[in-house]
Amino acid sequence: MSDILLKISEELQNGKAKIVKQLVEDALTEGISAQDILNNGLMAGLDIIAVKFKNNEVYVPEVLVAARAMNMGTSVLKPHLTESGAKPIGKALLGTVRGDLHDIGKNLVKIMFEGKGIEVIDLGVDVPPEEFVRAQKEHNADIIALSALLTTTMEEMKVVVDAFTEAGLRDDVIIMIGGAPVNEGTRESSGADIYAEDAATGAELAMSALGARKG
Ligand code: B1M
Image 1: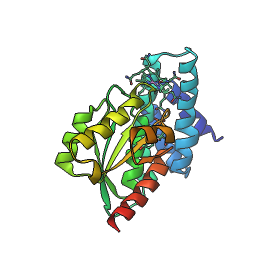
Image 2 (image 1 turned 135 degrees about the vertical axis):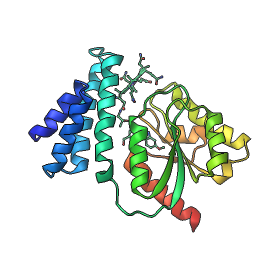
Image 3 (image 1 turned 90 degrees about the vertical axis):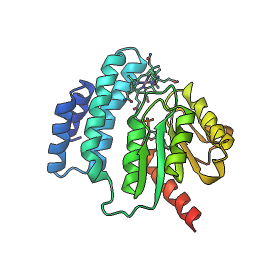
Image 4 (image 1 turned 180 degrees about the vertical axis):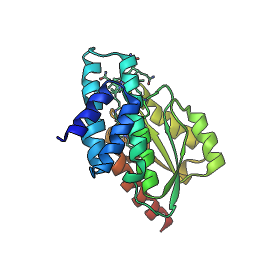
């Protein structure tokens, strides 16, 4: 692996957001692809933190600063991960479900969707079902995109789907779900339409669903 990618991984683990930002800019200047920087620099560092977190070698504060560095790094990559000039082809409401504060995966979904020309209204983290419904009444989106990272909060997917059914809005939207503990079984039990394993796949599936919907 190149020195600079290793450095990005190390500084991310140290939670040095400004240094990570600078290193990501330098890596781009060196001609390293955004995808390579994301996978082998930023994600590589976060993966190491994830293992240490699981093993109680680091704790929430360290993970929090690493996550901040990750989000800072991906924000620099954003224009390089997206296809420029993509025409708007649909609208998505995006959020991490109630009780869940993880936003790195959600932010990647946003980047990938926008890269395909899907307008994204980002409702943030810890979003209650009624807020998704309220925002849908305001924005009339095509896709409701839900992220969850905890086994406890993945149950919220079904609660959101049910809230849309109760509000009489379920037939008007495509509901997509994703996040580390989520799988095809969660999709079935929640009543969502699409499960996506990663953000790039999510954007591809969103495009296909929008294409099918608009004929
Ligand atoms: Co949390 N945490 N965390 N954490 N955290 C996990 C998820 C955990 C697996 C760590 C572990 O191994 N123990 C564990 C969950 C265990 C479980 O539920 N079974 C855990 C825990 C327990 C907790 C707390 C309860 C810890 C505590 O307080 N004691 C607490 C909960 C807080 C809360 O949410 N209420 C907590 C807190 C935190 C931090 C705040 C410190 C921080 C989040 C900061 C932030 O997001 N800004 C954090 C982090 C960073 C993690 C780990 C280390 C990394 C998560 C991450 O961002 N991954 C995580 C360990 C792990 O995942 N191995 C862990 C990178 C990201 C790109 O992946 O989000 O999965 P991910 O997104 C992927 C796909 O899943 C997919 O696309 C992405 C790839 O392209 N995807 C979608 C995601 N959403 C999608 C939506 C789609 C489509 C695809 O369509 C709509």
